[in-house]
Structure formats: structure tokens, C-alpha cells
Amino acid sequence: MIVNEDINERIDKYLASITDLSRETITKMIDSEYILVNGKKVKASYKPVLGDKIEIKEGFVKDTKVDAKKLDLDIVYEDEYLMVINKPSGLVVHPGSGNKDNTLVNGLMYYTKNLSDIGDSDRPGIVHRLDKDTSGLMLVAKENKTHVILAEEFKKHNIHREYIALVDGVIEVSRGTIDAPIKRSKENYQKMTVASGGKKAITNFEVIKRYKNNTLIRLVLETGRTHQIRVHMAYIGYPIHNDPVYNKKISTSFGQFLHSEYLKFIHPITKKELEFRCPLPDEFKDYLNTLE
Image (cartoon, rainbow, N blue to C red; front, side, top):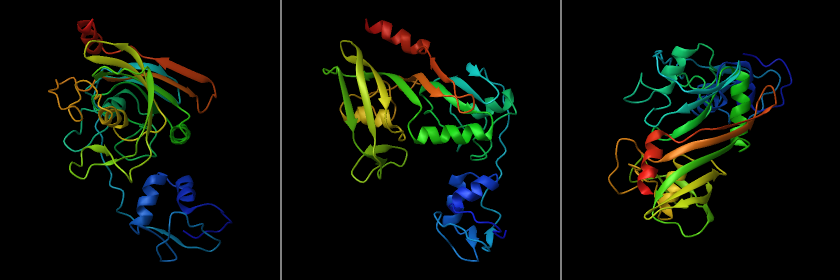
């Protein structure tokens, strides 16, 4: 590919606009020297100039076949651009090691062929994710322009999400903010931990109700780190109830009592403000009743 115009933008952004590859994938290809300029490695921030020869090698992106599978999807909202899904606890969002055909993506593939395809090949439509045992509201993009705008809005923290969680222990203060950096644990790659040198992470919480040995809280994130709520609450001594990873107590198969309850955002195409609220799962509500 020969650059025959004045571009004046980064190569990762430019290639994302003219190919089917995501900007994230392009950056990885540049780092791995699958994308060269004039036969040489460049940085993702490099701005191509007139006459540059950009070479995109094959073999980096592996085609992943995602099988469609009928699932009982709880669709809260849908239009031609996006969907809002109420994900049940226990459902993995996308295929991965050991789970190729029992995920939300498999169910989405069965339900519709209209899903964005600019991300990883095994994650069509997926703009963001919830942990396997976290229930509640999730956004799904049905076409690429919507996906790009939503992804940018998530990055800018313009999409407002609120979570409900039950934690072990009684929190005495009415509200608080946890500002503690998070990084992947050196001892266990499957876990995240609070540590210096980690990425900035801020979680706000307020108490809804106190029980004898537990507290029901509402949480709002200012950042979106992996396992952020679970890590932060365990860090201050109030782990999410029934969390199999960050709570040392014995947990049941239901997993952590954490629910994405509220979602508000500006529709990327129509520009209308949309908001949704989703009730707690029955098992969550039933357990709360036992605490009364």
C-alpha cells in the first residue's frame, strides 16, 4: 500500500479507518512487526507521509469460528444499532480457553447476524464485558460505527454504570471513595491486586442497607479496571459476598453477589439519552430476605 495523500494522523488510527482491523489489533501488529513502513518498524504514533509504503503481513489475525447456539437471552432494549442485555450470573461473555460454545457471544450469534466485527474475531458485538458471575446490564453493538463510538465513550467514562453488591462485614461510614492502583498479581495471573505501579482505579460506594454481618452497597466506577470492584472491596476489608476469588470464605456456584443494576448513556446515533434499570437476580434477592 502506497500512501498517496496527506494523512496527518497516527498510523494506527489511519489503518483502523481503512481496514477491518481494530485499532488495538493494529497496535499489536505494529509492535510485533507485522506492519512495516518502508520495510522498517515504526511506532503506533508514527504519521505516514506521502510516498510511504505500508506493508501489512498476513498471519497475525487468526480466524476464530464462533458457533451459534440458542440461549434464552434477556434483551432489555434493542434497535438497529445496539442492544442492552441483562446477563445472568454464571454466563461467560465471550469464548475463551475451555469454553468455546456456552457464552453470551454464542447466543448473540444465534439471535442475530447483525453484530459489529471490528474487535477480536471471537467477540462480535462486545464493547465491554462483565465477569462470569457478575449479573446485569451490558451493551452490545450491532454495527461498527456504533461500536467505535461506544468504545470511545467507555474510554472517556461518559457511560454511567451503577452496581449493587452485598459485602461481608458492616461498613460504618455512609459513603466512601477508594483510590488505589490495580495491577495483575505476580503470584496468581488470574487475580488482580492493589499495588504501586498499577493502573489508576477509583471506586465510589454508598451504603444502602446494613445487616448483622453484611452491607448492601451501591457502587459507581470512575475507571474500569479488571475486577475493580471485587479487588477494591476486598482491599478495604469488605469483600463481595460469595466471591470465589477475592473472598476467603467458602463460596457457592452462584458466585459473587455483584449486579450491574443501572445504565445511562447517549445513544451514539440518535443522540437520545437512554437509561435502564435492572432488578437483582432472584437468588440475590432471596438471600437478602434471609438476612432480614
